[in-house]
Image (cartoon, rainbow over all chains, first blue to last red; front, top):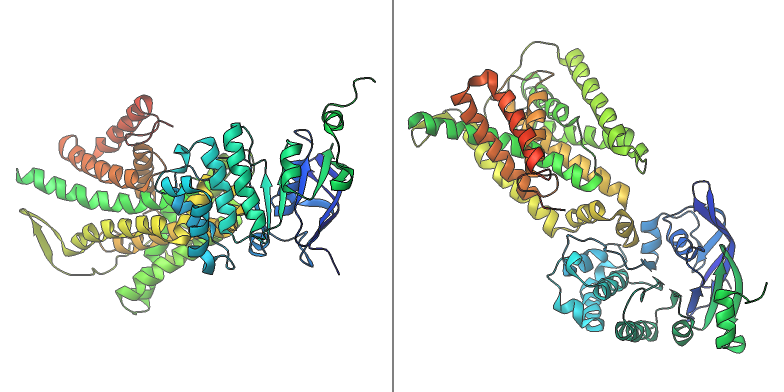
Length: 240
Length: 288
């Protein structure tokens, strides 16, 4: 039996710059995992490589028994492996509902468009209120909701969220955490990228610490670090 | 008074022509960020193919127009594939594609000269006869063009707003990476934008071939005018492009009346420079 999702020894980068150096990680069916680590150490690059936006230079990526290492982005989305990108502006001059409807672009997602749109509006009532507004007029939190909403419209079988709470107020962060929790409860496995370990521990089963483009530690509930250890993971030892 | 009405009506004919040409340029620009200098040559190919099918093969004008439109669309897709796509993501993409599409224009113009020769050609008119608008007389064919242009622009606008394929073009133009992440095939969107734009050019050429002579360089002048239009209207919104097209059409007609044919292009370019100095995003362009 192969695993639901598995990355083995993936290296990738931008032109001559190597960012990922042989990353291996996996996800069993029905499991959520988290990725954390300092900024600029390859978390977003890893997600982009999985989505096919960046070509890996070595290694293999398998999803649901299929090798998707060399698949193109539309094929990957159509297979159900969907990424919600980091708090960006998406399509600034398009309206919220228009963007969500368009996001059911892949063949597999199209028949479920109406049902998924209703559930996205149920999950994020703010998007329902702003359905006729242009995306560029949305606040940071609403943009993040739209980004997640778009990913949900793709009918994901595995959802990757890249720092969904980046730069948000604690209140909004809680709101989004609740929504993400609901998505996971609804049966969609997650790969969640975040800086906040407590946030991650609450939503996922296992964590990977990524530093310098490598997985340097795997954490599960059995060996979960206490607060001091987390501080050390992030900031290093005080003595050298 | 009658002269003025006649001038405005001829401005309407010019405006229709420029609106069809400029909207095609606008579709490619908003999707790919490329300015297609081969657009006028695509129009010319459309006219020649329409002539070959309609006159040389004798299959009728409507078949000719359809063939002219289709052949321009196919060549447009080929140009995108061979001369634009290889440079995608390149830092100097805009400049490189200026050169490659200019090269495509020259290749098409010279090929047309070899294939069809230098002798002037003309298509028959869709409808014979003349139409009188408030005392100004134009050919029925020109009246058809005046009515067809806004309908085509409306259809194009509805396509980009309502249809999934049209929306995907706008999405790709605004954020390629995010478009790819919701499953849109970006290269397919590029080909679609180029094909659609070229089809519009081919159709325009097939219609223009009935009221102007079909020559290998017939596309050059409409392309230059369409450039002035998109600079006037700001590249981006279809509505602004259409508005600017009719405005330029009227201004050109009035300039021909007042300063004569010889000085009209000079005045138009002067106007364009003035607009660029004071409103760099165009008359109707936003402040972004």
